[in-house]
Image 1: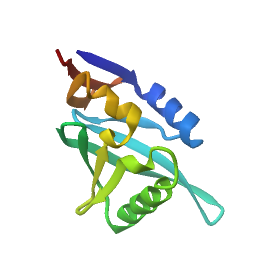
Image 2 (image 1 turned 90 degrees about the vertical axis):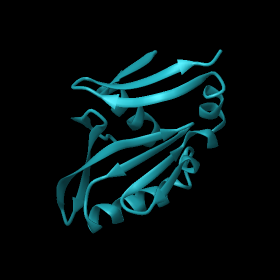
Image 3 (image 1 turned 120 degrees about the vertical axis):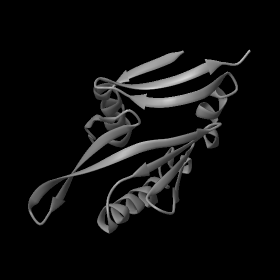
Image 4 (image 1 turned 180 degrees about the vertical axis):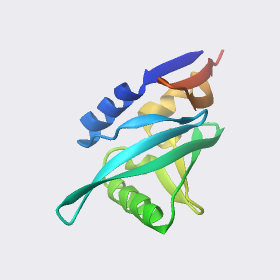
Length: 136
């Protein structure tokens, strides 16, 4: 089975929950491009990062991201700030520009995996596609 979400639907959800718009775009079969506007010395700069779903183990999603030391620093700062917000317990930074998203650490998300097995998360020009199979 598949659940398809447009990039705009995901961006709107992020904005409602986090109060910050994050435009998303197709970056490859397992990659989504995320933009972030950053205010630097009275000027706004757009920073882009590619997030790639490397593998899925149970309800854990391993994600890698591109970028050098500057991007890595910003990602680690964002994860640190997110730890104090709802859902922050789901994100764990890993070495080598990687993140672990532990969905089972959230009661609502974890209960979903009592009923379905997450198979894949991929992307096309319009949608983020979550593939899963129901448990019998």
